[in-house]
Amino acid sequence: MALPLPLPRRAGRRTNVGLLGLLLLAGGTGVLAFAVGSPGPARLVVAAHGAAGLGLLLLVPWKAVVVRRSWRRPAGTRGTGGVSLGVATLLTLLTGVLHAGGGTGPWSWSAGIPVLHVHVAVGVATGALVLVHAWGRRQRPRATDLDRRGLLRAGALGAGAVALWGAGEGLLRLTGAPGAERRATGSFERGTDDPAAMPVTQWISDVVPDSPATVLELVGTGRRVRVPVADLDRGDVVRAVLDCTGGWYAVQDWRGVRLDRLLAEHLGGELPADGSVDVVSVTGFQRRLPLSEAGGLLLATHAAGRPLSPGHGAPVRLVAPGRRGFWWVKWVERVEVVDAPWWLQSPFPLK
Ligand code: HEM
Ligand SMILES: Nc1nc2c(c(=O)[nH]1)N[C@H]1C(S)=C(S)[C@@H](COP(=O)(O)O)O[C@H]1N2
Ligand SMILES: [Mo]
Image (tube, rainbow, N blue to C red; front, side, top):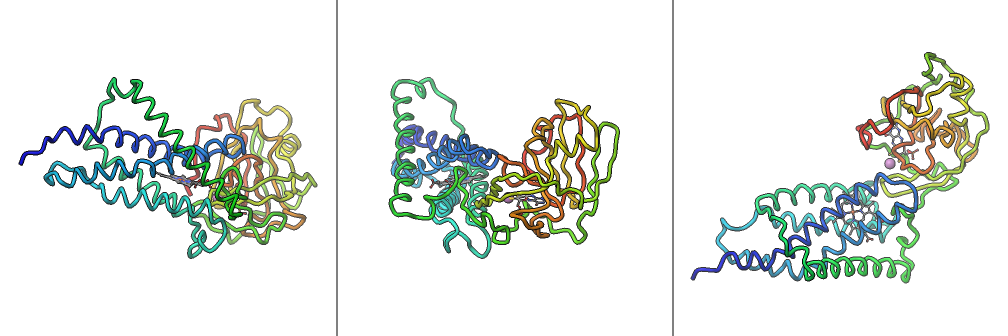
């Protein structure tokens, strides 16, 4: 019996396009969620991320029909990698929801690895599998995609996704789950005003240095100045949130010296207005920030009134209020004023 092959394909097209759209949105907002630090934008991005991810569930009944039809067709006419993609997607959803709901409870910290890290890893794998799966079955946009019915369906899917996310958030609040307390970025509080209780984390592969810096090198305006780290505690205090992309945050009173003050004292006042500043660790970890922000940046030697521990960046680390943890360079040995724009660097550190 010959099956009318094109028909089932077309019948499932909108479902597949919807799934692809949600997956791309979830991937994009996921990466964005790691980049934004200020609560307002972060709340929006994280909400869109949750809605896009949970919205995938709304299409499961339709996708089930598409899948069942495809399994009736001869093997050569099916897509590739569908099963692994399905499993990876569900694992990504599961770990995302576990993180959002569970916080620092036993569900969330598996063998020392934050569930959020597992989430990101399977999320990235899902992204790769999507490309493989969708590539061989590329669809051209059609005029009917943007007709009244098409837009209505897309709108209904969007509204349903947001409603599902809202229901989830409501449930966390009603049940008093730890997730109700998480920050706009999705992070959970750990070790506020108690640096010893704050996790020690490295971005990827950095390690606590054996011999920390004893002098800080300042470079710029044709000068190179070496300042003993013992001279860096000038009593400038900033209360700021260290918010790690591993899913935790802590608020501390950081003490040290404001960066603009330090640069003005040692390099003179003629700093380029539109320049940047490279903050470099003894281990080679570094970030470039706009010089215009220097007034808000602190080189900290103390947290909560006590000297920094080796793990937390002793003798001196950067405090970058409003920026995610990976900007807070630990074990700083050099600060260099440069002409290049700050965005001319990898968006995330590489080590
Ligand atoms: C296809 C890929 C992805 C899907 C389907 C997905 C889905 C989800 C879902 C459903 C949640 C739970 C949201 C909630 O219950 O409110 C979540 C949380 C989260 N995801 Fe993803 N995710 C993906 C990829 C990523 C990537 C690549 C990143 C980061 C680079 C990321 C970062 C996060 C963060 C930070 C949270 C916590 C947000 C919160 O607490 O509400 N996700 N994700
Ligand atoms: N030199 C260096 N600084 C670093 C990192 C790193 O790997 N190397 N990790 C960053 C990240 S991702 C975070 S969240 C904070 C963690 O600071 P903590 O270990 O004091 O909690 O340090 C940042 N500074
Ligand atoms: Mo981090």
